[in-house]
Image 1 (tube, rainbow, N blue to C red):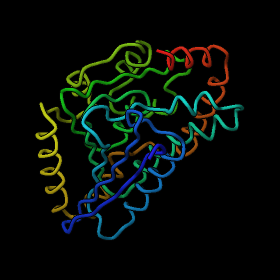
Image 2: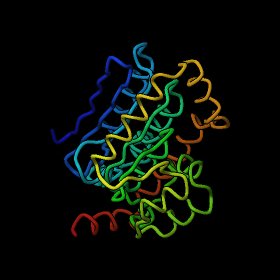
Image 3: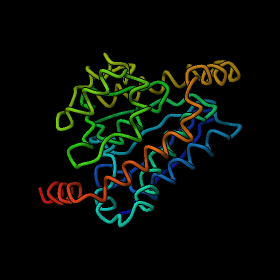
Image 4: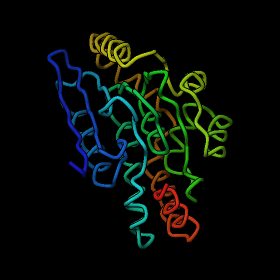
Length: 253
């Protein structure tokens, strides 16, 4: 259980739900990132899938981003590239999926968690789902998730999140900027809204949805190259003394 889990289920209506869990605030270690990306790709290719819901388990944090235990264990740039490429794989799996992906964000999204939310096509959240790009605090930057987040909220808002790295922005702020499409007051309301929207989409022409997905993501075909390049930047910075000291201080809080 300490390694986390990824599960997938599909209803008779063609609504597939992919859920990830990790006991440390739904953080995403490398193995879990790889499993999540592979699951998104596999479920997307299934004939019975009409629409996908992407969620995490629990009632609090949606995703705390990278695993600090793995970050501190990285010993060279090759390992750094491999780890941060995990987030690239998840974002690109969402981007290249032929199915519309609905995000369900029940709580705080931090670092890579903001990137996961941004990689969905239509995202619902609760009022507790504040966001923070905390990478600068520990000496790296939101390089891998940056293209996905900037695409959703624009350059100015992305700069706000990236530079004011110690502060959360509210769920309403995220909705106003376009990261969230809708914000509701409770998890019960969240689940009802997500299911209602997924049911509506599942009844639409699947070919039209696939074509619309391609239109929505137009201009991102170079991300197969861009995101690994960004991962290499983070993989280099995570080896710095500044970053190692910052991570150790953060873990000791």
